[in-house]
Image (cartoon, rainbow, N blue to C red; front, side, top):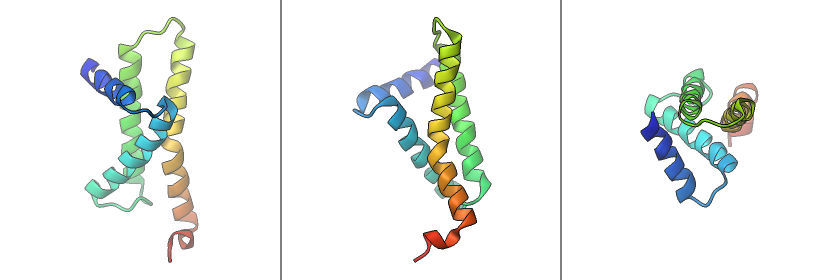
Amino acid sequence: MASWHQGTLFVEHALTIGHDALHVLAGVIIWMLIGLVARRSLTTWLPWLSLLAVILWNEAVDIWVERWPDPGQQYGEGFKDLLLTMAVPTIIMVAARLRPGLFRN
């Protein structure tokens, strides 16, 4: 778990992108990669649920490895990361399912 955490810290510090923006970008990229690897449309639940599993794992590792003085702040930050990571894939998936014409030529 510590090596996973160190890897995510490396990526965060190697890029000049803010922590919150990194979660938004990573969420979309990982969601699309899962769809490609699984050969599933992004309108199906598998890529979305797989992304949710990845971000839950990442936040569990953060909670396990990091120890903040105030657990409420740490859990709040983890929940914010979850929301930011899942927001754009959720919006796109729901829009594509409800209004597929928006995504056609």
